[in-house]
Each structure stands twice: as C-alpha cells, then as structure tokens.
Amino acid sequence: MISITKVDSDPVRERLLKAALDSFLSDDYHKVTTRLIAEKADANISMIRYYFGNKEGLYEEMIRDTLIPLLDVLDGQMLNSVDGFKDFFNLYYETMSNRPEFPKLILKVLALNQGPGRRFIQQLLERGRTRGIQKVDDLKSTGQVTASLDPDIVRMAFVSLAMMPMLLKDIFEQQMGRSMDAEFLEKLAEFNGHLFAMGLTPTSAE
Image (cartoon, rainbow, N blue to C red):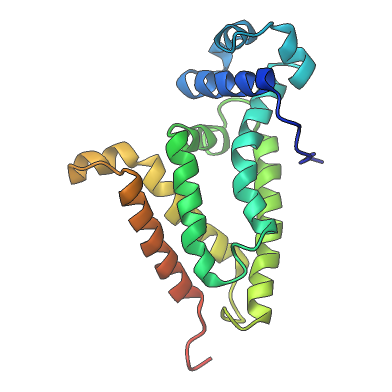
C-alpha cells in the first residue's frame, strides 16, 4: 500500500530529491551512489537514511514526487468536464518538460525492466487507473461521454498522446527544425485536448 501523505516541505529533503532526480536521469541506477547524491545536495549522507531509508527508497520517492501531482488531478475538478483534458495535457507536457529524461526513465523501468521501482510505479499507475475509471464513470453519469466508452481505452489513448511527444522530443525537433518550446506544447495540448474531447463526446445517434 502506497502512502500518499504529503511531507512538510524541508529544504534538505527537497535538495536530496532534486539531486536524486538529476543523478538517476543522467546515469544508470547502479552507477549512482548515495554519497554522490548527498554531495550534489550539499547534505550529509545520513539524511538519506533519515528521510528515505536507503537508495531505493529515495529512488521511489523521486518517482512519486514527480508523478503524484499528475495523479492528484484525478481527485480534483480539472476533469469534471471533457474540456479539462486540454489542461491535463498541458500539465503533463509542462511537468515532463521540466524533467525531459523522466519519460525515458519510466520506459526503462516498465518496458525494459531496467532498474528498481517497477512494482512501485505499477502501483502508482494502478491508482491512476482506478481513479481514472471513476472519472470516466462520473462523465458518463452526466452524459458528457459515450455510455459504452471503455475507460482503459481512454487511459491508453491519453498516455499515447501525452507520452509520445516527450519520449521522441529530440527526434521530432530535428525533423521539424524547430523547438518544442512552451508555446508549441501549449498549442499541442490545446489540439490534443480538443481531439480527445471530440472522441469522448456522444454522437447525435447516441
């Protein structure tokens, strides 16, 4: 069972999380040491044990700290209507733009089974799936989406539209000859949000 209780902000803890993020995103898990992370964070190595228990605990908390804001949307009001998907795409793109290697890290763990944290990430994503199903049911109850809509298809479609641009960002930018900057991603979020909403909305025949 994953605890999602928010820990009061602590400067040392925040520095350790940031140092861990920088370290794990730039190098393989087994090459990153707690000593290196502590040095980057300008903290005593004992603080890693105090806050996170060990390296794996820090690794999992780093992932949780990045993903939870996105999953928390499923508990809020952003997706109370299909129009909110534009804002959800925008939040995802913004979050991942600040951590450009993070989607690749998740892919390495889940698809390639490299590094620890697989079960932990799966638990987080299962929480997202469960609450996403509830959101779809709520939208169905208000007639905003097709009654026969499969929540797993909705989830997979969202992940595809959200994750792929960030996974292949370097390649897309090279092909287009332009930067996928904040303005570009905002337009992409608006387009994908509209596309998504149109796919969810019942047709007149329904």
